[in-house]
Structures are given as structure tokens and as C-alpha cells.
Image 1 (cartoon, rainbow, N blue to C red):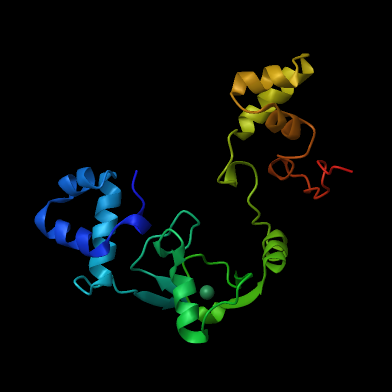
Image 2 (cartoon, rainbow, N blue to C red):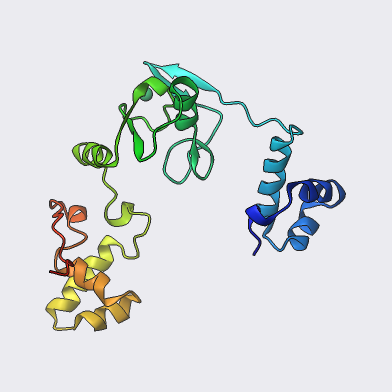
Length: 204
Ligand SMILES: [Zn+2]
């Protein structure tokens, strides 16, 4: 699989004029989606293609984005790591300092009003999310491997005398995952409990 950083932009643009996306993908050894994305990206960079205009409707102070769909994090974005809210914020107030992040003050993820954003530390963001009960936990976590039902079943298995490693084997996950889930180190909030931030794996 090729990497966009290793691709010569000029070559790619020249090739993209010559070949269709399918042949491009084959030539650069990438999937169709990637070839298409690169083609668009390079053409935008070259000024051959205009990026889609960002549009919104105003609703009670919020700017509801109508031109772009939410990305995987739920915020309208133009690419994986570029949310429109961030673009709008930086247009108005300049770059966000390193190590800081945006705190969205209104609860509408589709809102791209830069004035509904304040800048805080990563810790502020955590506390903010926690206070609004929007933490990523359980099945909401993008990395979740088990479901709530799995956990309930795993608990039953444990009560019937199965070992952690056997249960882990059954679900095809690491023993630590099961151990954490069944001893209250994870999956606490999903069942209505409070998260315990104590570090259990400290080396002391
Ligand atoms: Zn808003």
C-alpha cells in the first residue's frame, strides 16, 4: 500500500489526466477510494477543482452545517481529521495552540459556529465531557470489542466457574479485556456506575 507522502503530486495529476480512477489505483497500488480521494485532493491543491462550499442555516444562535456530513466523531468534517468547526474557529481566531483543544459549548454536534467554542486543555475537555455525561465508554467507545450483552453473558460464565482466560477465548479477546470488564476496571459506566480513574496497572 502506498503512502500519500511518497507520491509525487505532479506525477499523480499527470497520470490522473491520462488514466481513469481504476487504472490509477492499480498503478499506485492503492484502493479505489484512496485513488479517488487523492485525485480530488491534488486537484483541489492545484486549483483545478474547488472544494465544496461550506453552508449552514442559523438556528437559535447555532450554525447548523448543511453542506457536509458528520465524520466518525459526529462533527461535520471535510476529511478525517479536519472538522469544519475547527476550520471556522481558526478562520476567525487563528490557530489553536499546540496541546490545547476545542470545547464545544453548545450540545449540537452539527453546529459550526466558532463562537460556540472555547479553548481549553485536554483535561478541561475530559472534565467537560464527563460533566455532560458524554464520555466514550462501553459500546460508544470506538475501540469497543464487546457489547453490553457480551459482558452480561461473560459475568454469567464467570459465576458458573469459568476462568478469565476461558471466557476471553470464547469471545476472542485478550484475557486482560475480560479481567478488566469483570472486575470493574472497564464497562462500569455502561452499567450506570461511576468511572474509577485509579490506575490499577501501576508498577509500584
Ligand atoms: Zn452552537
